[in-house]
Length: 246
Image: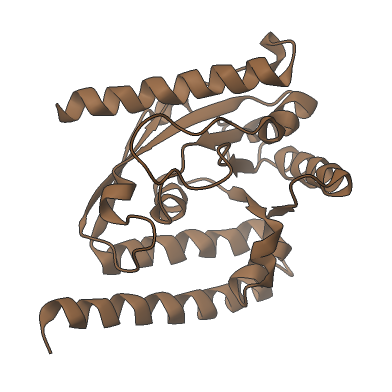
C-alpha cells in the first residue's frame, strides 16, 4: 500500500471514529455541563488536525474581549469569520481556546452523530423562517449570557473561488444588534489551500487565524452598517495575510 493511500484511509477512518465517539460522549457530558461537553469538540478538532498534519497559528489573541475566566458574563461575544473550506471549523475550534458555540444550518441536524451534537449544544438556524429567527435570538442570547462565544460565518456558505468574500447575510448580525455584544472579526488564511471544496483528504500545512479589534454594534444605526463594517474588517485582515505571503 503506498503512503498517500494509507494516509487517506488513516485520516478518513480517524475522522469517522472520532466524530462518532466524541459526539456521543459529548452528549452524555452535556447532561451535567454544556461547557464541558463543548470542550470535547475542541479535543475532536485538535485530534483531527493532528492526524492530518495541520497546525494552527493564531495572531491577535489580545483582541479577544474575554474576562478573567471563561464563565464571566462579560465574556460572551460574537466571532465572525470568512469561510472557504470545511477545515475552517477545525481551525477555529482548535485555535481559539474558548467555550465556542456554533450557528449551524438546520439541515445539518439530520446528520447522525454531528447533527445530534449540534442540536443539543449549538444553535441551529433555518434561513428565511421567522420562527427560527426568534429561536436563534433566544438561544444565542442565552449562550452569550453564560459567557460563551458564538461563531458565525456571515457569508452563509463556502467561498469556493479566489477573490473577495461573498456578500454578508445581515441576519448573522441580528444577534449582535439585539444583545449589544461585540463582534470579533477573524480572518482564516490558508485553509482552502489545504482542503479545497469537494476534497476529502487535506494537505499538510498551517492555517492562520488573524483576530481583529472588536466591533461595537451600538456604534451603528442598522444591520447594513454592522455588516459593512465587519466585512471591511475581515477584508483588511485577509489583505494583511496576502502582504505577508508576498
